[in-house]
Image (cartoon, rainbow, N blue to C red; front, side, top):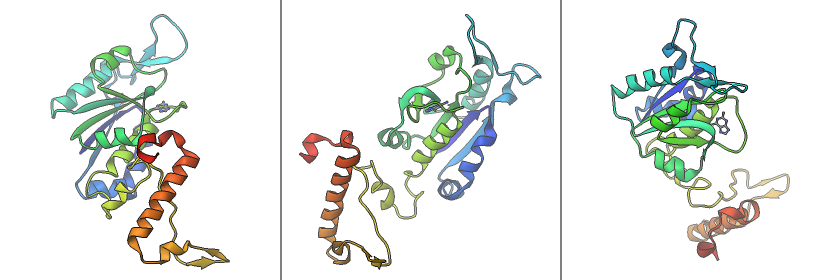
Length: 229
Ligand code: 6GU
């Protein structure tokens, strides 16, 4: 899968993709991430990429021309399955959405800034609009990094233990059950006996019950009444 991320603060995107899982996914050749500096496509030698809003009001608006230039350049090289605009008024990111995006080959992510982009970009270029939650960030870059991370970690082969992405919280509509590791007892705090029993079916049943209980307590909105009862 190939990501082309368009940003006016490309330095913000360096670190997230040069560490751990995201770095390994790229080293394994499963993922390519290309960050493009929108300022290189500015309309003049001052590096201008934004301007005052027509009709007045505070805040700058990202101009259509630099965005058209870079998107056209990218589209001349390959076909894109999605052009995603990161914006607080987009559709809120969830696991289902990440799963769907992970099936795509080539994706452009456009990071919003200031008061946003000229509406014509959203109407004529963008295919999906994504927010990472109900709060406002200074720009779309951190959102783009969150989205790309959520997608990349579920691409087959990215995680060493293939099953571990499947048992993530949310993948089965439930929060993950509690986990323990050595020692079996620490300062009087014990690991549940069932986990030491070696009875795999019983342990799986216990984990499922714990996942349901945790979801009931913390995120009752996730529970499908028909499934759980
Ligand atoms: Cl993607 N961008 C900005 N600027 N703020 C956000 C967001 C994105 N998602 C939530 N808040």
